[in-house]
Length: 237
Image (cartoon, rainbow, N blue to C red; front, top):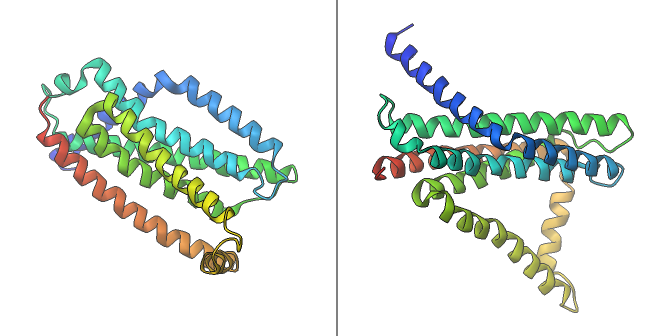
């Protein structure tokens, strides 16, 4: 193996290990959240969603916790100044963080699949592949938004900004629901048509559509990585 490649892989392994060890601080919280949402999912596994809604929320909450937790741990330990004394590029530092995010998404996806299989074994409604892809897409998009904000403004300011980013879609959705529910004729025919078309898609078309959206989310994630590297390279440590 090329010496430079071997050295680069060794550096990445060390940076990833650093972040994973830092997550030990929130491991108990993540474990409690998993048990809590798995319990809620188990109790509602025979609903239309088959408990998948709670599994998805669990995966999303944990995936979103990771960027802030890792950045908070680095800030607490003064890693930015300490890491600057090592022969590690800022691009490698940012790339390792994005890889850790992906590893956590893979882990939560595995938990979602196992949880869904357990629910199905007890008579629940299995979500299948279509249900597994949605949390991945949402997580990739949210993390793509979060990471550049964290690198630009730091952890403390980012908490407020990220909270607004999270709450805004919920507020808009709630406002839209209230608006539509207040109309005498009900939701617009165009909206109903869109919902009907989505509902009438076959499973194969649904999965194909979700894979297409997931590919777009992956592209957004890659662009977010490049933006974060650019921001971090210009940042004064």
